[in-house]
Length: 441
Image 1: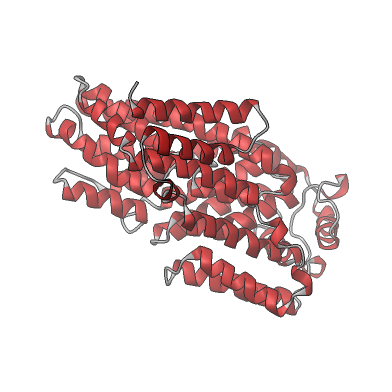
Image 2 (image 1 turned 180 degrees about the horizontal axis):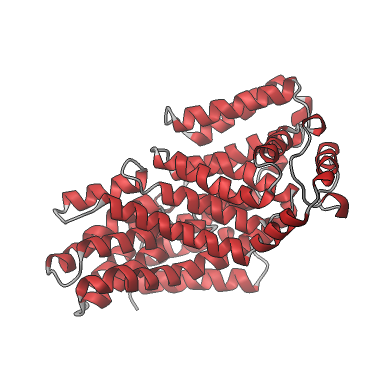
């Protein structure tokens, strides 16, 4: 049995053991990376640790630390209530508002994790407050960020179009963008309808306006938004909203600095979030006690371990080995499907940006034969490799899990993993049928 096969079998065992036994999957993956790296691939421990996602670690710690402060001092409550005012109390609109906001931010060139890191904490806080399914909210945040990233000036769009141009293949930035946005919107619509969106619409229609003040007062007082008299509402009264004090005002300034620094000046969002959080802690030390304990350390360990193991597979050529195996498949259509599937599977656990740059060149030999349409296959591969970013093992999915309410976190992780694994299989099939097959007829 080759080293590549052994490494893949161990990865499957990591998932099975962590599912059957109560053990953090990341811890198990780190041990597996050490054993497989040193015993199977014969590399040094330092090489194994080289795959640890330090940047992702800083992002998760920094963002969850900052927004733990913002939740503790009431700033998130203030933002959530203002959002309710903005949509005139129609809480069913908020998942779509978050989708559009994320899409707009990434469409103008912001990195997808940066957009999700800024929007997800507020979106998940809103979901917890107004009894919206957190899985649906997180899914729509991630899909919005993914769809917008394929605009001609978006990160994913620029990478994909750049690789196509470098490979001298025919391409269409418009087809890529609108196809990707359509796929993300479709996934979001399915998630909205199956995860409680219809109940939200009904709740909004049936809620009398006179219940609005009760809802706003309940939220402002820290009560339950699920009380029968205040479960849903329209137009919360301004005088019932949480008030801004010095601490909340400075926290809002800090969040604004985070958004501008990450989206306009392209500063590292993890270190910037840590800097803002530390500054707020120095100014208001009494309000920050216990905040570090609220960082999602379990999520950090889980994602860090899995990504370290997958990085080991990439560094040791296992992904390339799979790609070379596909290259020897005689049927171009079957080879095209397998490439899309590999892109989806690997991207669910690794960098989508890296996958887009690595797998499109693998398709060049098939595209040059003219038996498979270049635009269709490139678009199918791009979509298959990106819509799985809702997986809790990707940066975006991990941010959603880390910012979910503590009581919901395990459920959000499991449900997002189910959605991610389902999309990982369904997306390549549908993209292949809709975009690749017609181009070969």
